[in-house]
Length: 533
Image (cartoon, rainbow, N blue to C red):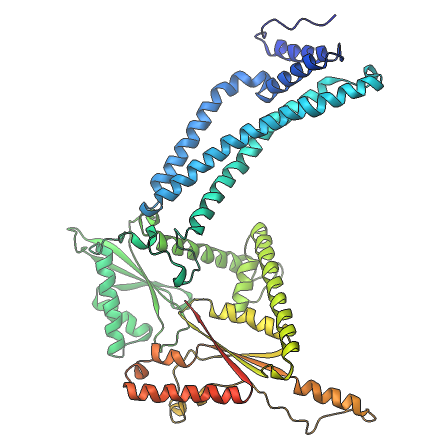
């Protein structure tokens, strides 16, 4: 006879386990009662999925975890910048909705699996097989109950993630926020980023002191006191004394003074780091002022600077880790220290954690696919153009410091090299020398070599006329490319001597540049200008 399971749950854990097992056995007593037994099966799976014997514990834990989740969401909203609170609040709301919806869908999916897949398949097998020899419901129902318990949690994580990603992509698509790399033409002038008020008080103590330090550096440049010695002298006049130094020209200065709006003396630290290279004779400086007893207040500064500082700190930590682990001949993947931009990027990539290295490797492979695609398009267009294709190409990259000119130029060089070009790079990030000033202005800017001569060509003896024609044709089809890292326009932006020229002299130099462009065109050289901002 079927076991009577109508009584309430026993209080002991042993009784609870026994009740569940007996209910599972009851399902197989009369397998032909499909509808009734299916409801029992779904009910048992639900009970197990809700915790089974631990249900009384989860009953009190769930309110605590949900309250904690709401508390963390509110904390994120309160800690966000004022112009980011609307976005963060919407993001947390959609994450919570995604969490609850995904949990409900996961439970419905498991219940539907039991009701419409597992039990019908079991009844079909009962009609053809002797189930008493092999069928035991306990293992199957424990697996289904575990699946119903785990599936909502696994789905909740993905639901929260989908909610956040959809919100971020929506705000990004609406151009509501600044991106790390974004052209000025794509800015939404009505977004909060562009309409917000300045989040730093211009009368703040360190802001006033920073302006005084900047004026002192400018004064030193005017009177010719540049370099480390001049830097120490001008800062000493402001009350700063050097107390430390590091690699790359980094220096720390100490000052004891009253803030402009304070009444007591405080210890102020000044960090000065040159960054470059620059087109100027004077290296630009990265200046950070802080109180000695200050705390990390990046959450209270403009989010633009906070994101920049956060990225800078990550790169600095990665570089330090690389110096400790990679610069070893025994264990290092790249034991040689970086000497240029390309080797520095490789060094930083190797110093990251394996998970991030794999992610960066996937991004690099996707980028390489695009480079290969561009190279194929170049080959196809050159084949279609035939003799009309330019023999030489000048790619002129101009823009602000750290705008990605060298990185972009490297990708372009790779695509041109795969397309059959002989590629070279020339940097013009320095003012013209006194010797170059005696020559025409455009004389110092090189052009790719497009003339080819067959004089002295080593052709194997006994070669046929067809082989000699193929060799000569390969030389005639040679294509060269030259990448300019900065160029003529930089003289008028960074060089005070050219900025002070009258309009008549500027027009003469502009005419010289146009003559240079026409001469390049007559030689089959194409000059393209790219501005990075």
